[in-house]
Length: 54
Image (cartoon, rainbow, N blue to C red; front, side):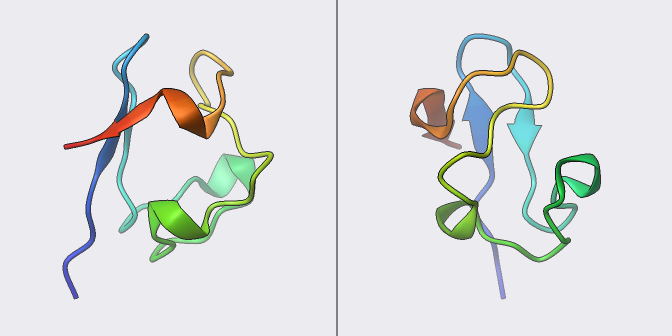
C-alpha cells in the first residue's frame, strides 16, 4: 500500500507514514488521516491543520 506523505508548511518537517512518529507515540504504518487529533509536528509543535499533502 502506498501512503501519502505530508509536509508541515511552516517548518518543512515531512510526516512519512511508513516511519510514523515513534517519539510521538505513532506507530510506523499509520496514515496521516489516522493520526490522533492532538498530534503535533515534532519539530515546531503546530497542529495537523498546517500540513499539506505532498
